Length: 288
Image (tube, rainbow, N blue to C red; front, side, top):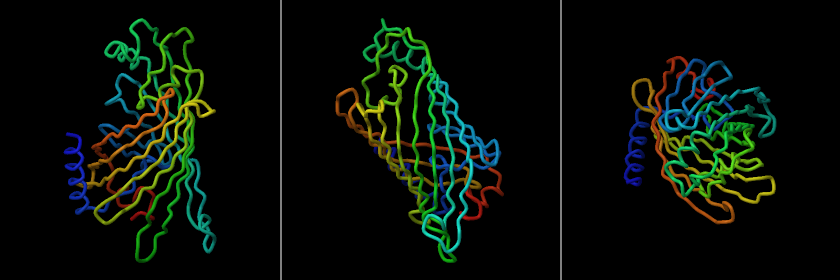
């Protein structure tokens, strides 16, 4: 079933991009969604641009039992200098991302529905988790008189830790897809580093590729690697609908056991976006 959904979405993305040039996606970058622009997504965080350099986001639609809110801010841009080296001749964007989650309700639901993961006799921790992240984004290929700018590259690093009650007895869940949440049960942090590459593969197709490394505790006792490949494009009137599909592969040691998972992923987003902002592009005139 997942394979059929993936190929259907892939075909839709290919078809959609026949009618419109795909845009660079700012979700994994240091840059924010344009001011007063609302992006409603089914599976990804829903975002809103509250200022020229600030956006807020949340994933309440799917994770309504895991209340969460986040903010991303573009702090400054290192302007390019003409006739300089590779990095000095390109604009570099620096931003931070901050997320706050309240996973207690989620763990209580897991305890009720899946007692084999969390014992029904365990006391769930009342906890708030916080994730702080640094990002730097650069356009690797500069715009020329013949070709548009391309190869948007982002580096990121951050930590996730927790604050909450001490009188709990629940244990970390031994599931490969939940390793990020172990911070809610352990007196430690989850730290991570990663990189993203967003590019126009052709006039009809946009591709996002990323790689991440996560570690539970500073001594890399338990770790996980992730790779994702997404295909996406815009369609509909004024290109307000974004179709996205891809594959996520995660592997690593989780509490002493090597595990590998592969998950097909799909998403649909709708933009309430002023026409003028769309014409100027998400990064200004460089992406026209």
